[in-house]
Length: 140
Image (tube, rainbow, N blue to C red):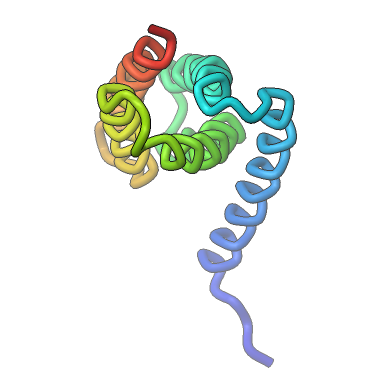
C-alpha cells in the first residue's frame, strides 16, 4: 500500500485547516452585507486586527520562521485575505484604482511572506504597513 510523504501530509493538513478558516470567515463576512465598499471596509478592519496580532507574535525573539508561518494566526490572516482578495477582484473595474493598487501591494507582500523568507520578521513589518495603506484607502 502506498504511503504519503510527511511533507505532503502536512501540506494537505495545512490546506484543510486554511479552507476551514476561509469558510468561517465567509460566514463572518455575511454580516457585512452586499455593498462592495462596506464589505471592503469590514475586511480592512478584520485584517488589521489579525495582522497586528500576528505581527506581535513575530516580534518574539525565540520564535522560528516556520512556526510563524504555521501558526494559527497566520493561517487565519491568510484565509481572510484570500476571501478579501475575491471581493477586491469584484470591484476592481468600478473602484478607485488607488484602493485596488494598495490591495495588490498588500497581497503581493503576503505571497512573499508565505514563502517564509530569511528576513520574515522584516517582511512581516512590511506586510502590516501595506495593509495599513489599504485600510487608509478603503476608509477615505
